[in-house]
Image 1: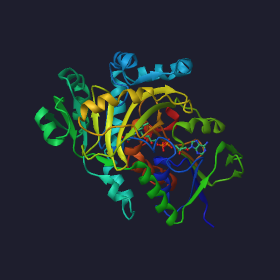
Image 2: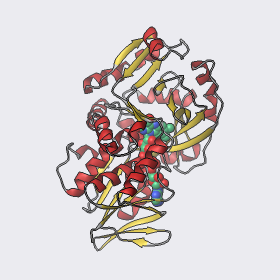
Image 3: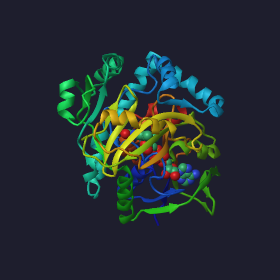
Image 4: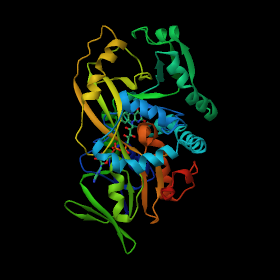
Length: 407
Ligand SMILES: Cc1cc2nc3c(=O)[nH]c(=O)nc-3n(C[C@H](O)[C@H](O)[C@H](O)COP(=O)(O)OP(=O)(O)OC[C@H]3O[C@@H](n4cnc5c(N)ncnc54)[C@H](O)[C@@H]3O)c2cc1C
């Protein structure tokens, strides 16, 4: 009988790893405490940002973060300030020019494969109609905010990321229902949009199950290695996988403690609010001045925003996302915009904005987590790389920059 590979965590990263391993002919068990798409992969903005290269820690971030803390999308829970401080210090260190350039180079080395990897993943599934070639549009109300974004565009040029600058009239032609308040736009034409992340995950898991994969609902308490054997202790049993891939998003380092691994992983929590469905916009749009995104999901217009640094399981506070509604109304006048539901999710983030895609010192234990703001973008390429590592094939990208031992 073939040895089973266990994948712990059924968010986009775990599901993509499970599918890539299955396509290699492996018996795969996907394990989640709640079910597929229970974490950040459920409620994101759905953008697949091909060629995304700007890390979160940019030169000058300390000043912008202060501004964002005062009246913008950033908040740090006072109760967690002390525990967040070491992460913040490492994060600020990563904003130094040479770290910034290094991180951008290795981010784009992954994201430049986003579209192709998604296409490959969706091949022979019923999910391809949710993957839409509509681009990614960033809009600026003021010339000051457009100029403030110049260094990011410089980095995009350095990294070979395709984009087009639009003036007010071109923005209006592209998205005619928007109020004429935007002076500048930046369009990344080769980006895609997943019009229902929840249904996408469910569809991919269905495909995995139809092809002989197993899904197990189990709350993992602990992962251990004893006498070179890996074990997973859940609330009800102990499992002994031949190989294990840990893909538990922002919860991953809780589970890696038992195998003596720690990394500065933080829960960068974000919120969404669902509004009634509208055909008013055709693609996800970033309002750069206000720090939010609106996405035309098939289930309604989705408003996403915020970076809340706190415990991954802290109680949500929906006040800030609710306070953004008048700004969306100003952007889309005449639309029916009433709250349908709200949600919180945790982006799994490391200070250098690069994920961990790596073997543990034990050769049969692998890690794939820390995809920060880009997990939907990077799921399929991460799955391909993990399958290569498991098969001991040469990976198409040098994985040194994503190694677990960098922390
Ligand atoms: C508001 C917001 C907007 C975003 N927009 C975008 C976007 O437009 N484009 C983009 O590319 N990315 C976006 N992201 C980021 C993206 O959603 C994440 O990077 C991605 O979903 C992370 O996927 P994951 O599989 O690593 O983690 P998750 O989706 O969080 O999945 C982790 C899974 O592990 C399971 N788990 C945890 N602990 C255990 C345990 N003990 N036992 C068993 N299972 C466990 C959880 O139940 C969960 O299902 C956004 C994120 C947010 C919050």
